[in-house]
Length: 98
Image (cartoon, rainbow, N blue to C red; front, side):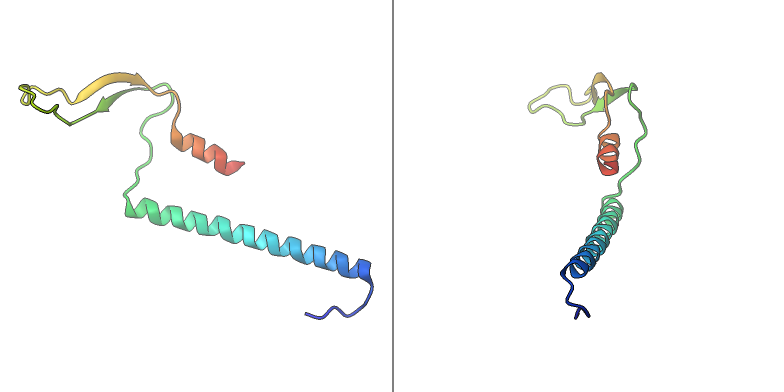
């Protein structure tokens, strides 16, 4: 693209505004591409929304049976009771908003 005048200040201001416009367009494209990738990943891996909130009491499910265990039939699948202190989903949303 050829700039019509030889005035340096005018060229500098035009170039600066053009670069800002270019950078904002690239940033917007990256945001949209990231949203598309997230949607594709969520669809591919059958991601579900959270069913619990901070402060809820949850049980940790562990279906594994210890090796050489003689209590296979009476195995208790839930290990312990936990309280949800934070959710990674909410942390990632806060980081995305920054």
